Length: 243
Image (cartoon, rainbow, N blue to C red):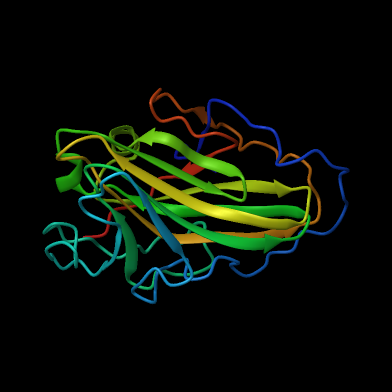
């Protein structure tokens, strides 16, 4: 698809071992509720904390207007996510903002899935002011048992994809056993002041009843940033910044 696509350093096993099921590819609607945070809240999501969280995750507007926390990203204007990759849903002008310097915050949602292969992903944005903070933070994002980021360094995410720009992170999840699965994001700050990150356009769409392994993108490059380890087949396309 182009030089902007990369492949992760390692692959993980499918969610469970099962018989391959043949069937036509079918693109379905987004199964994640409030995946664009268009309610201006964490409605349909569950937010939990571990340890002392000094700045809880919030939903902020992405309208390129600078606002103080908790209405905004500590004075940085965040542009709207105008990417067309990944999610079938356009941005609603809001995003989840993770910025705690201490402790961990987890945002999760459960979905009921049938057997098959699903398209999964979300968009991320590393703000310049947060990236300039001296201490790092870690970010985990997984959907239906497939990790897109696993304890990834936010500094490495910003270094790999640039700051002040929306980037789509996408992959596929193979569900061999029908049941309830989780969409999960966990952010952990290391010290005051830590780097921060935004998430928007979270999606999970049914593709096909087949569980066959997808063919890797031609010309995919190995992900070189060692601290930025994403498990499973990880396809990432760089997006253009919006001023």
